[in-house]
Each structure stands twice: as structure tokens, then as C-alpha cells.
Length: 324
Image (cartoon, rainbow, N blue to C red):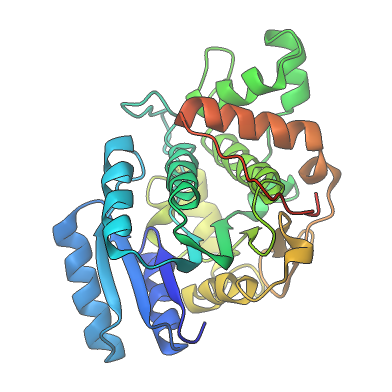
């Protein structure tokens, strides 16, 4: 990270804030911190500067739920004109009891991925990622189907039942909270993070040689705002319980350190999803080998669905040989 330029989404609190602080401590010469309002992110940058005694923080207004805000942020980054070495796509949220759809018609839990896709593609198109850039996007153990109270939707079955076998249409239905997708908060979150893993695998195949992307779970770090909208059973039972059981949770610092660890990975594992060992929520991270993460048909369906919803695509002139 020394002498690098980093951009962190969702950095006004929680893991994004912690990661931004760690990046400064590791010697980044510029850390671009983002938030939904300029005033809030300016306050964040000032607070980080005071705490770290480092003047490397640059505030950037970025609301991932607003395509206009993403485009404005990209325009500001073009003005800065400095290629980003580490892109940390950290922002995310666990949905509440009732389904909420954004003004753009996207399920709330899925909205961060759409904004992250628009941001990443915009940076690639503008040549604002360095030739050896590393992209890390937040995943979750919830997408493995071995975490209590969390399971994911069978996309192939959904496609066969309601979309004439079209998996892209099925993933789009999940992104938009379609009429044939029954809303359950924990399942919506697991689906969102599974689509993140598929998206990362598909992006890896499109990145220029030298760049790499990884989906990385921060693990169980309940002391963040990401769970503020969680349902009652999760918020008042599962999360408090996890804090008192050894190995069920860890600190935001430990969680954020996973992101930074992944930034040092090589291109040979680009596109893979890293998380705690199977059936674990903490501890060392490893590449997940579950077959559903490596289903190329679902990976490509996820990419095409995200492209359709986000309205932007990316084609590399020199694709890498990413692991899928």
C-alpha cells in the first residue's frame, strides 16, 4: 500500500472508516473517502486526519443509489487525474423487515452492487485504475448457505419456473425484487452477496492483464451500522448472541484487515471469493470452493443482469485469464 492511491466506499462509518484509517497507517499517499453527502464526508475526512495525524484524506460525495451521483463522482475523479491503485467497494446493508425498492427500482440490499458496478466500469473506461490495480468488493459468509438463518435462491430453478430458463432474467428479478421473488430479509442479503461473488468472477475475466478483483467477506463484525435495518430475530437474538460465543464475531479492525490482506493477492486468484473457513464466521480467510460460487453460467447471467440494470458495460481489449 505504500505510496498508493486508494478509494473506499461507505467510509463515513464502520468497516469503511476503519479501512481508510488503516490505509493511511500503511503509508497510502492519498485515501479518497466517500459518503452520500459532501458535508458528512468532509467531516469524516477531517476526523480521520485528526485521529491518524495524516493529511492524506480526500472527501468525495458518492451516493451509490443515484446514477447521477456516481457520474458526478467520476467527473471529480477525472479532474483529480490520478489512477487508483486500490478500489475498496465496501458499502453494503442488510435489508429490513419489509421490502424497500430504490427510486431506480432496485432492491435495497442489491443497490450497492449496482452503484459499485457503475463506479468500477466508469473508472475502467476513464483509465483511472492503475495497470496493477486491485479491486476488493465486500462479500459475506451468508452466501455459502451454511450460516444459520441465511440461505440463497436457486437461480436455475427460478429461471426454469418463471423465466423460461433465462438465468439473466432470474438474476434481474432478484436485483429488482420481482413479483415472483418472495421477500425475506436474510435471503435477500444472501442473494445480494452471492451475486457480488458472481459479479467479481465475471469482472475478473474482463479486466486487463495485471489488474485483479476479489470478493472478500469481512466476517462477522456486528459492531457496524450495516445491520441497523436487520430483522428482529437477527438484530436482537443472533447478533447479540454471537458477541458472547468465541469465534462467532470479531472486531471491525480485524474485519477491515481482511480487505487490506486481499489487496496483496496476485492475479492468479482474481475473481475468487475469500471468506472464513466453511461453517466459520471468523478466523483466517480462504478461497471458497463451494460449487455454486463457481457456476460460470450464473456468473455470466449475474454480469449481464447487472449490466442491464446499471446501464453500463465494459469490454477489455486485453482480457486476463482469471480463475473462475
